[in-house]
Length: 478
Ligand code: NAD
Image (tube, rainbow, N blue to C red):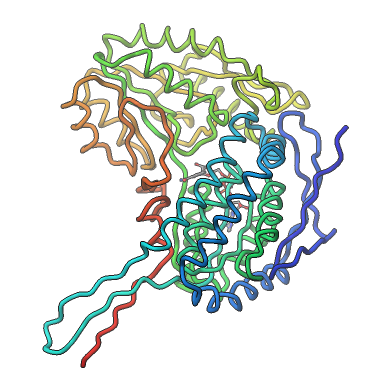
């Protein structure tokens, strides 16, 4: 029996313990409690926003290269504490320890990457129509950013918001998911050791309906950077309208993958295995629907089924496991309902289709459904689990039409050895991201963004950096 994990809010450079409004956190692989973390409530959330506000001018006044030194120190602290952090992530979220280690490493790399941008935050000089006038365009920080996070990459997501926000001169209040607060506390401990000025980074735990709502509706918050479900994203958008607060929304996905007859099928199978085992299919960018050209459909289904049969689902901390658990019991129930609904409407389960009994861990078998169609929940809503739908198509045009027929527009992929088909798909798939002959995994220097119900704005790279700025133009007559 291990001792309970601890959580304290971090406001204005101080850790604040509280025993009020405790929210129990479950290890989903065992369904045992890991400990409880308090909800900050309105007063503490307001003090976190106030601390961020008070610290912002002085932080923005530092040269970016000075701010970068703090990011590098936090990155170094993360690398030093990596084994401990990865262990916490795996236990509170249910992902494999190896993936948790990768997540921690990526968080450090992300901070280093944006530290490199310190010398490249650039404005423009524009020629004026007036004699003797210069027009200067400056990138200014938004001010106070509220970063509201999901549970699926709970540690990396902190870095993804903190790094671009801080390097451009903003201060931040982070609210982790109430399902995964403990790794966020680890992040705050590293921030404290790195000596970041008080108020620049603040952490408050709590529910979306309490702390999240408070952050979104506060007039003292200048930007909301939200990653989570499309449903919560639209509520946040409506609530942010009150103060016309700037939004960056990274929301849900329902990624299609197209497999053409000329594709390297082994590569496609390996990529789809990765998609569904990586984080147990709980990634916004992972494939949920596969459209396979009819001539190779049977062969492909059999190859993928045989591959899925080898996936060892089990203890996230054990090296022998290929796939961990879902986030909670509600997720097991959601996937079970989706399978029942699809089956009742004529779909067939090729492999898998069920979860463990309550109390035995929130595991769900790697699952393939065929003969799915309109009106099935599994086709219309995000699955967010280790389940794939595979359907035959006549040609690329039909595959593209079916792929685009979705409320979501985050990621998509195609497997083909024909350059024309690949380029045609890239130009016609209406998604923020398209992978060609490759598994789903975005790069730090790319741009991760969705269209339609998948979001507004985006993260990573140069374009993700400037999300955290507004543009000021100075007209200077001399
Ligand atoms: P969620 O929407 O349930 O919660 C996300 C966060 O929002 C949590 O911190 C929650 O407390 C908070 N929240 C909920 N309602 C709120 C409200 N009304 N006001 C303010 N805050 C509120 O999402 P989740 O279950 O934690 O995460 C899974 C979802 O995230 C999936 O839909 C997934 O596709 C999406 N996601 C998207 C990306 C991306 O980059 N596009 C990345 C990861 C996850």
